[in-house]
Image 1 (cartoon, helix red, strand yellow):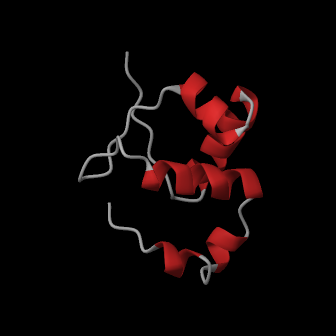
Image 2 (cartoon, helix red, strand yellow):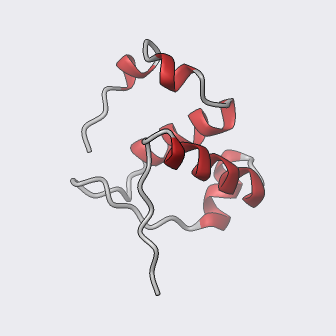
Image 3 (cartoon, helix red, strand yellow):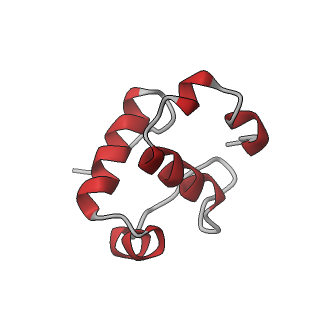
Length: 77
């Protein structure tokens, strides 16, 4: 998952995201736990504390990132 952060700010699609979604996306792509193919298992209470966002705000941002093609979430049964 190679993302050039400097190019994000020139991307209209990214700029139209809410501030919470932008913050959450940058948190995800710069998280030290992400592997080389972009897979990350999120500990939501830790993300909540680190970002200062509520779980509801993180869920709303997750949905926005999915609907805009920035995030894919694998559902486990």
